Length: 249
Length: 249
DNA sequence: TTGATTTTGATTATATTTGAACAAATATTC
DNA sequence: GAATATTTGTTCAAATATAATCAAAATCAA
Image (cartoon, rainbow over all chains, first blue to last red; front, top):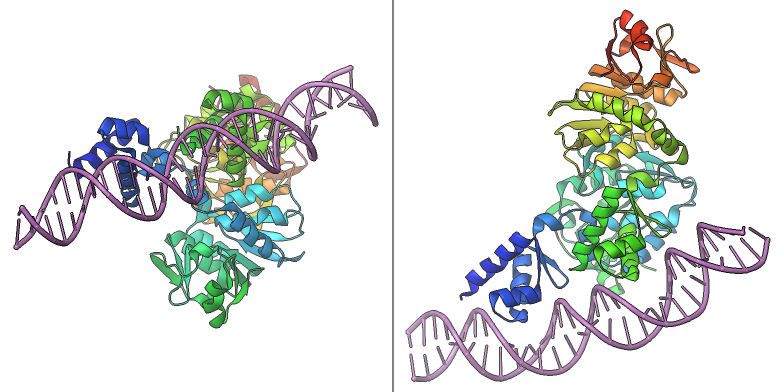
């Protein structure tokens, strides 16, 4: 059987069953498990299927919440490390923006007892902070249910009505050459608006995103003032050189 | 089964039942309790569910304060009866306002599969309708954590930007003599704004509130066009006499 | 055919996931 | 409020999946 038709067969099985594991596929397609893994890796790379531990899933079944994918991609300890650093910069009385990034979300646990006002477009953040000391202002507009966040023009206008002390935001990529980049225009809009309306903007960014560019380059690096990260010295040097304040310990 | 699909299964069970304990989940998903706990911990970390002692809850239920929960639980049959009547008036394509009343909340279950846009200031409504066919516009502004709703000037201005087909609202009292009354100015503001910006306003009101006045009389009866209620004929007669359309069957 | 390239399979090492046991924390009962 | 039962967190070991490396087989071009 040719290489291509095997892939098609695999795809068909996954589509029909919704889910299949490597062993099962190896048996049905009559090849070795290692070959199945290689095929699955390629197909996942092409965005045809969703790779799971031990097998693969149909995309339509896998796509439920965005936070799921974020979770898989990145690692909790790094995020908590970064979030803790960022939380140290928050003072009682502050008014802060928080966007819908997964690292930003981790901030919640560290600020529950602070007397601050949080302006956010993220429902998980709202949820996590309600019934705490924190006073919440929710940004209005269209709900993106995958991201569990509010986006769009109305949201941006809402943000513009406020002037905050600090903004805490995430991105999908940052590099000295191309500045901030995102995988979605919706998120880029919100990030830009928050940065513009805060006196200081803190970018929470784990080492995997430093020096990377995503498809949408949306802002120069100087719209933020602080980079909070877990990255080692050599990775952050270029950012310090262009005048960014880097917080990594 | 991969751990990804297991998590989805768990999420689905929790979403459907509102609540589930570890033992039950372990049984249904056919895995050990420790694994369920680990999954729940991760999912709670991602803000997908609310972790309780011994199990997990749906987000929409978790943050609802006891007072609101009691309201929802009180007179359930009447509220569902009214909500069902109201739901029958909603057509695919409608843009509707929903306020944060407990009867209005019961509307959610009947409209999950309709292709409509809901503009609301109620977080329980948002949680209940996210990941359904309904498209959601969340009203922005200050969060009142007791009511789990957005109130205030900014919220009112948000409402004014939209023109809806129908508004579904609740009140604390209604009488022919004194019109609509509420126990809180915050709610009154929102109700008034929604009514003003909808072509038709439906007041969802169980029989206990008919003919009653609460401390704040905030609007004349004619800002609404329809009264949806479970009250018997003799109670509703006065309202029909002043020109209100009454729906009670 | 011969040699180069690609694809596949086997083996080993690494990482991840899972479950068990037990101590600590938290509810529940009286 | 003390005693009891549950639930949870932690640590460790076993099972399982993946990644990396290299050699064998198949394919292709001349």
